[in-house]
Structure formats: C-alpha cells, structure tokens
Length: 389
Image 1: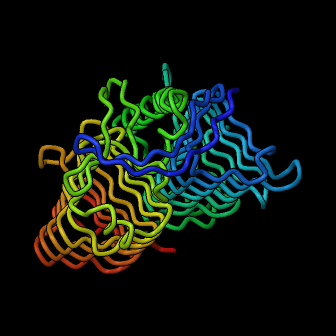
Image 2: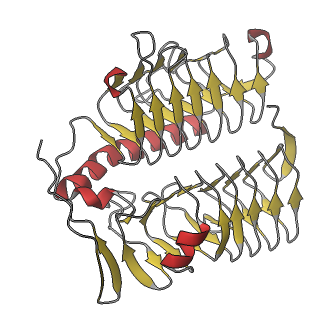
Image 3: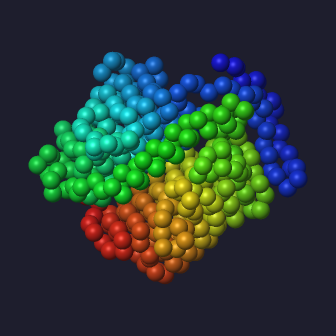
C-alpha cells in the first residue's frame, strides 16, 4: 500500500468562488474488500474482521476486546452506518451476510445478527436490519428479521426469521417476542435489498475516492458519485460558496447546501456529526441554532431534505429522508427542535415544531406548533406507542 505524502502547511485559498482547504495528503490505495471512513474508531483492531463489500460509515465505533471471545466479525455485504456502536467487550459481535446496522444503532456483545435462521424461498438477498437508534444487547437477530427504530432486544432473546420488532418496544424475554413483533413484509425486504445495494456501492466508490486522494474522504468534501442512484460528485455549499475542508472535525458530504457560514458552523456544531448527501440529495439546510454531538442527516436514494431556519438538533438525533407525499422531500419549518436520541424520518413539519427526547416521528405531517412529548412513537400520523427504555 502506498504511504500518504507528508502533510503540507495548511493553506486556505479562495479560488473561482470555491473555498478549498488543502491538507496536502497524497493518494492512498484502499484496502481490499471493505472501506472504513477515516473518522470511524476501531479499538483492538486486530480482533476486528471484515468480509467483502463492507462499508463502515463516519464516526462508527467498533470496540473489540482483548481476548479471542471478544471479537467483531462483519460478514460479506454488510454495513455499519454513521455513529453506530459495536461493543464486543462483553462477548463477540458477529454479523452474517447482508446485515444492515443503521444510523445510531448499538450492538452489545455477545450478539449475532443474520447468522442463523431461514430465508424466503428464492431470495437473492436475505438481509437483516437494525434500525435507527435501536439496540441489540446480548441478543440474536436471525436472517430476514428486523429491529425497528428505537426498539431494544435484551440479553438472551432471539428475534426469529420473518419477524420485526414494534418500534420503541423493549423486549426483555423470549416470552414477549410474539406480542412485540409483526411479520416482515415484501416491502420491508425490498427496502433492505435497496439498502444493501447502496452500501455495497459505497464500499467501492468511497474506496475509489480515497485512492485518488486520501484527503477526499475527510471533513467537508465530495460525495463519491459514480453510482446509479447518485452519479455526479458534488461539494457542499456553505453560505453560497462551494467548500472543501478535509481538516473540519465533522463530515459534511456531497450536495449539502447550508445557509450558515463556515465560521458559524464551527461555533454551533458539536463533534462526530455526519451530514451525508451521498445517496439521496440535495440537502437544503437553514440556519442552525444548535447541533449536538453525533447528529446524523441522511436520505434514501431519490429523496431529499429541506430544513428551515433556526433548527436545533439534540445529541444522537437523526434526520432521514425517504418517500413522502411531498415529492419525496422530508421537510421542517423554521424553529424546529429535535430532542436527543430522537428520529425524524420521511415526514414534514410546520414552523415551531418540537419533538421531545428519544421519540420517533415517521411518515407523518406535523402542523405548526406541534409538540411531540418525550418517548413518543408516531407512525403514519398517529401515536402508536412509546419508547419503553
């Protein structure tokens, strides 16, 4: 593998309307079979093993232990998304083939996902899915099973193939599984197959982007482009200026247009933040009053985000675009507040909307002034339960 050239003195240059910060890093060849974003943390890396076509997104933490019973094993075609925690210090964490660990999820060992179980007849892809800010703690999630947003599966519990947990539920015993799950649908399987396709493409395209120049996959920078769902490379636009800064502490990627200046973002953004317009795009983001550590913005392919001014986003909050009845644009009005650990997915909101701590809003239209209490689960416009942990 080629060694990166020594970094030059940081130079800030304004050229042709584009703000560019040169870090001076040379090209680096990608490692075979997997791509790990440079911001991801691999602790005791010798006990972390990757299959082929594995993508590890910004600010994920993979924490293996110090002995052979505390490994992390990631199967072929699997992905570990932004701000995920895999912690094997209590026992090995193992995923099978085509496992999706989505934004903000945590898996605490000993745990297995997509290793055991059965697949639908004639299935080309047999995926398993751990959704946004969900937790698997010492449990087994079989092939063709799903853990829904902000739900938790506790020690010793198995979620069998063909079932998905109900969002927000805390399943602490095997006896609870039947009442706390529903069948995986064909629409769910199509969704998971699409996620696998995108993230396998990311393994290849981010590796290519890094091979061209290692600093391309750091800080404020290009999306890789070159994919059927996102063919063109883009740079973020800050206060009207295309910007590239590999030294910035957060990852802002691709067609992200932000009202705020670089300096204002530097003041108002926390750390370990991933605003990643490499799949769905564009993102149009109004002024930010506050953005807590480990916030994630992303969107499914062919969807986008439009977020109003004076937004405030809490610690480990997630804004995620997806299909909506509003031209597939996930939107907020001005004065939007999203609580810590909360998830806002495939929805629209008016002005001065507040979503409380550890809540889920999915496929819902919230009017001006709406207040969503803490630990509330709203799906398809109605309250369907609470977050029980």
